[in-house]
Image (cartoon, rainbow, N blue to C red; front, side):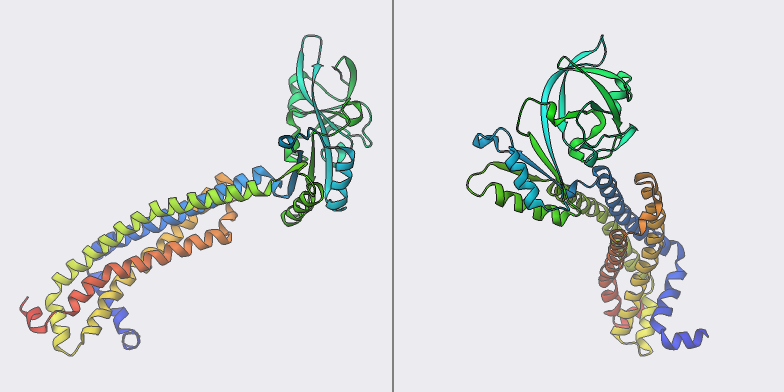
Length: 381
């Protein structure tokens, strides 16, 4: 069996035999490759996991658009006509939520009086869900409070608070994490929009089924409302997500660059191992040349030794990196199987390929030096 393999893969078998003759030295050289692969792949997967975790926490803000009055051009509020135009260009699939805002005195109890930012919504059921009570539809009376606000002041459905001197009853406690990220309900106090003295709206929030449709809606709103003069400013929150992703890509690149230094150090170790092997095996190389081995044959053997070091170290490094990736994703995003995402596979392939290429490049000079030995001189050595 070994004779058959030797006839088919003589170079590989000779390279393997040579490496096993100096097991400790070969092991240490491969260990450097292993460390480099683990460093590159693990840091890359950590960056992917961190980016995924933050994207989860941000929610679906990539599908959201905020329309605000253009204060720079003297527009202080959005009119009913503006809201109608926004609904018209947004279409039926996009949720449109005009919001009024005002700072009003609020008394949660006899001892607690404060000035609070109050929000006004016509249809809060499109935006929020209730953790206690029910969000009324239509919303004409009462108040909705966020969970943090309710916990702080011991509020629940049926409790009464005084807003701007008028007593209102709490209809529901809003569930945290639901609704628009712009209208994070945790500390919100929401009243019917009809209870506000102001006629216009402070902002209009839109959410679309997809980021692409949100982008199209934003462009349509700009075109419709800013046709003659710039009346509104339109903010696509998807651009924030894009900026975060770009930032993480830069961070990942820097981390991988730093980790690559360990592979370069491993390459120097392989270079040293191969040079020492060349010096120690001058006589053997001379015999090979004397019995008919050409320079290219010796070159192949030496390069195969370097390649084997890189492949073995790369495979072990990839396996260890998978284990590290399972732990990273388990503790970062709560799902260890997330390590099998395509982005992580790319980092594993890059780390393995870099390991093999580094090993081959490191073996080029020792291989050339060994192949250039004159048979007579090598035999004398």
